[in-house]
Structure formats: C-alpha cells, structure tokens
Amino acid sequence: MATVELERLRKSHPGAPDALRDLSLRVADGEFVSLVGPSGCGKSTTLNLIAGLDEPTGGAVRIDGRTVNGLSPGERDVAMVFQSYALYPHKDVRGNLAFPLQMARLPRDEIQRRVAETAGLLDIAPLLSRKPRELSGGQRQRVALGRALVRKPRVFLFDEPLSNLDAGLRSQLRGELKRLHRTLRATFVYVTHDQAEAMTLSDRIAVLRAGELQQVGPPREIYDRPANRFVAEFFGTPRINVVPARVLGIEGSGEVGLRPEHLEVLTGPAPGALSGTVELLELTGAETWVTLAVAGERLVARASADFATAPGGRAWVRPMRDRVLRLDAAA
Amino acid sequence: MRRALPMFAVLAFFLGPLAWQALTSVWPEAELTRPLPRSLTLVNYAGLGGTFGRAVLNSLLVAAGTTALCLAAGASAAFAVAKLEFRGRSLLLGGALAISMFPPIATVSPLYLVLRSIGLRDSLAGLVLPYTTFALPLTLWLLTSFFRKLPDELYRAARVDGCTPWQAFVHVFLPLSWPALATSAILVFIFSWNELLYALTFVSTPSKRTIPVAIALFAGEHVEPWGQIAAASMVATLPLAVLTLLFQRRIVSGLTAGAVKE
Image (cartoon, rainbow over all chains, first blue to last red; front, top):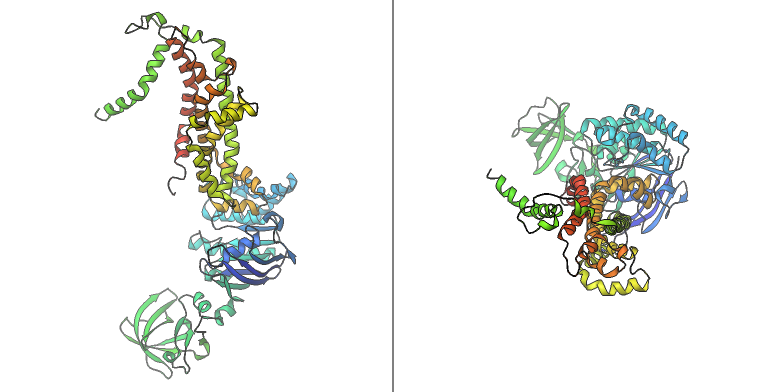
C-alpha cells in the first residue's frame, strides 16, 4: 500500500480559468480521503492527475515518495472505479475482472485464482459468465469494484462511484465500501459531490471550490469548525443558518453560523429565547425541521417529531451559544 | 390499396430497370427486337467467358484491398480523433472532408502522372491507392461519429487497467465497433466495385481490367452485344445486392450512428 502526495498541483486550460490551483495534499498509507465540492471544483481533475489520465500544468504527484509525473496510468499501479461503471460491454464479468491482469501479463492460473478470490469477496461469483447488460446497477458497480480490487493496486481511486445508484442501494454499497476499506487497509481517494457520503466514509475530507483547497480535516472537524462560510454551508442538511450576529442576540458585527440542531425550539417564552413566526414544518419521521422568521431573517431549527405549532403560529428558539460559528464574511 | 399503389410505383421506378436488365440477359440475341421472347436462354452468361471472369476477380481484389486499407487506416484514425487529445484534430477532419469534395475528373491527370512516376500505372495496386484516398474521408467521418458515441470513461478505464492507447483501441474499442465497421466496409466496397473513371484511365492491359471497364468495352466497332452486357451487369450486381441485404439492418443503424443523442 502507499501514500499519495500532491505538491502544488496545478492544471490550466488555455482560455479558461484554472481547473486546479496549487493543490497540496498528503494522503497517508491506508487512509480514506474524500475530495468534495460542487461540480467544476476540480475534484475529478485531481483524480485524473493522480491516475495519470491527465498531466498537470505544474506541480508533482508522488506515490510512495516517487514522482510519477509523466508515467502512464498502467505504470502507476492505481485502480479506478467510475461513476458510469465503465465495464467492457463485450466481455462477461469474468473477462472484465481478468482484463487488467491480462494487460499486466500475469500467468493464466494466477489470473483464474485472483478472479475467483475477488468474485468471492464481492459476492459476484454467480454472475461470472454474464454480460454487463444483464446485470442490475448495483451488480455492475460491484463488478467495477472487483475490476479495481483484482489487481491489488497501491492506490484506489473512486470517481463518484455511487452517484448512479438509487438511494437504498447507495447506502448499502456505502457500508460495503467502508468494510472493504477496513479489510484491505488500502489507500482510498474518493471523489463525490455528496457531502453525506464524504462524512460517513472518510477518515479525512478535502473540500475544494473553483480549483482551490478550502479545508482538509476529519469529518467531525470539518462539520464543527468549518474554515469559512462555503465549507459551513456545503456540509449538513438542512443547511447551516447564516445570519447577522445581532439576530441571535450576539454582540459583534458580521455574520455567524448556527446549525439547525443547535437551535432549541420552545413553545413558550424562556430566558435567552428569540420569538418568531413558524413558516414551514418538514417532518422527516424522527424529527421535524421548523423554518421560522426571526427578526426579519429565516432560521431553520430542529424540533421533535411531535412539534405541532401550525405555520403562522408563534414559537421560540434558543441558540446554543457555544455552538455559534464565526464565519469569515469575505469567503 | 391506396397505400400500396405509391409503393408499387416507387418499386417499379427503382426495380424496373433492373428487371429489364435481368430479362434482357436471358433474351435470345436474335429476338431482341420482338416485344417478348419466345424462349429464354442462358447463352449470354455462358458466353461471358474467361476474360470477364478475370475482370470479376480483379474487381474483387481491388474492392477487398481498398476496403481493408480504408478500415485499417480509417478505424485507427477515427479512434484517435474521437478519444485522444492532439493538436489539429478538427483540421484533420476538415481536411479529409475537403479532399473528398474534389471532383474525381479533376484529379485524373495529376494522379496518372503520380502513379506512372511511382511505377504503379497499369496495376491493380495503382487502383487501390487512389480508391483508398477517395473512400477514406467517408470512413473516417462515419467511424469518428461512432467512436464519439462510446463513453469516454470506457477509454479511461482501459488506460487505468494498463492499456496503452493502442491496446485500448484493439482490446476495447474495436470489438465494440462491428456495426460501424460493417457499414463502412460495404460503402467502400460498393464505391470501389463501381468505379469506372480511374479504372478506365490508369489500366491498359486487358487482363487487369475491372468489371465496369470490361462492361464498357464490350461494345465492338460494329456490334452492341446487349445480351452479354446485360448478363455481365447481372453478375456484377448480384454480389452487392446479396451483401447489402445481409447487412442492411447494420447499415441503417451505422449510417444514423451519432445522429441523435441517445
């Protein structure tokens, strides 16, 4: 297994804003790092640069301390799982799994052994002689995963691998990925635009925006101590409340952020509580998200599922003052 | 019935001449002036003889050679244009299109000089070469639009799995492109099978003539052997008709490949 280091990585295209600006990032051996951000933030570009599918305009990619700039993807010993699965349509599952090994010119019996082993690991042994078009979405992605695993590469790259699956399958495969990472102890670099996916899977998250790194850290830290407003708003559903400080009765100017779960909803006045008008109730089952108008600003707060004040009625919210985030207004 | 009538009209328009030709080929020479023959004969076919057999063979060689060259060069070039990044991609496509716009008659004399200077005048290879240059742009455009339709991620997956660009082409893209290859092959084959102008100009030895030339030169100074010409035309048409019927579904899907977003 291996470390991945990106040093001042830059990618520009003539006549367009830089796709990536001086990205430096170190992924430790066996670490699961997610690259997240909205589309066009440079996360897929970064993945392509690590894989060798694209060459950087500046900077270096190092795998295990060795600079791999200019090496072809095959020479870098990385594997990649794609959003559209990218299975070879004319080959059956066995052929798909065997292909990278054939390209590496492994002996036939070794190939057979590894294909069988991988198929067992992913529960796809009964599918081995099927063609990709005869598989369901979940099965296809499992085969794509298998095609990456079978080579025992130094680094695994994932390009939004779960985005094409429906919600139920997605969370199931998410669990499987996590388990797989633990079993293999391999280095995973995972690209997604889904913040929840990044939160649940990663050891660390790198947040990108318009080609620039915003923050790197463990999910907890990213969520609790976002570096700026962009990061704060990118993580968490519903979105963090960002309002002028005075609305929450806090001294100082500028804007502050407070997550909905850090606003306590009350049905009567209380010390430190702000009064507002209920605008919208969204019941999720376990809880209710309440949108209130407070001092001309809109706040979303988490209430228990049995909160019953109808829209138009009055309610009170008490901010947890120690959870208020000072956000850099410029960002 | 109201719909059948126009259909028959169209069919008659296209198939009528062919049917007439077929009929003429089995019509005894002496009865050609009668409204209908009293008996049918195969003597015209029997009379085609070894010279025409030779022409059929030559045509097959030239058409097959042209098709093979076109597919080999066209498929790899189209793959590069569709999936690889290099300078001048659109220039290549535009240039190919511009070349195919040249009227063949305008290139006859320069091509003649070129072929003579490289010693290919009056040889079958001397036909394959110019045919290929004329059919290649069509092949290139057809196959490029087909390869563009195949997802880029497939190419990236092949690269990550250890393929060089060439290996990705051979192991992943070629096996997927049979419909498009079949379409191009048939179109190129038909083009070189039918070509008359170059074949007539560049080849002088009778034993190296292709079918169109052979048929055109059937007519003697004093006789016009209509029956034999008709028989020869039938022999020349049949392989194409069979080929096209066999592949017609693929031709249609190949011709419209990339026409609409799926």
